[in-house]
Length: 156
Image 1 (cartoon, rainbow, N blue to C red):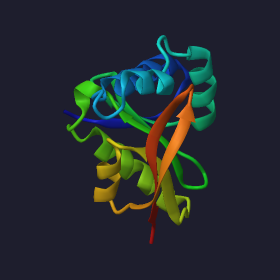
Image 2: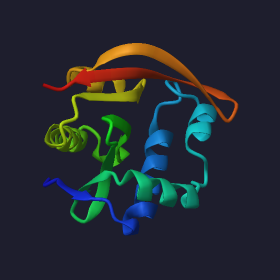
Image 3: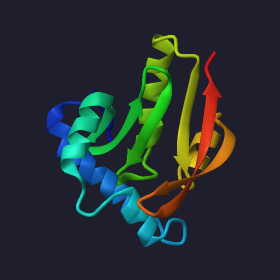
């Protein structure tokens, strides 16, 4: 499977929004309850919100055979806001490629520190790539408490 990383275009908004929703709702309810998933990613998705968000964030997008299979957002200050792989393509190297690409861009821009808030399921991925956990967070979203972890990685 050849993974290609492309820059975001507005034409990708609906497919990325649907991918985000699918990812959140594919998490085992033993990790995040159905209520927590719904608070995190509403059904149906809020497309107008995501169109605006994605136009601002301009994520890097992973493509396999003309299908969007993942995306990652890297902000100018080194913050990785979203990093998702379509449930069908998880464990196929998609996020490896996206993260390597984002980290390379960070190096080119002279960013010295990457930081993010990782979900319970994403935390091991980032730990394996040299991130350290700063603290555990409990975020209240739409009446639900959602746990994530503030993490960082210093770049040389």
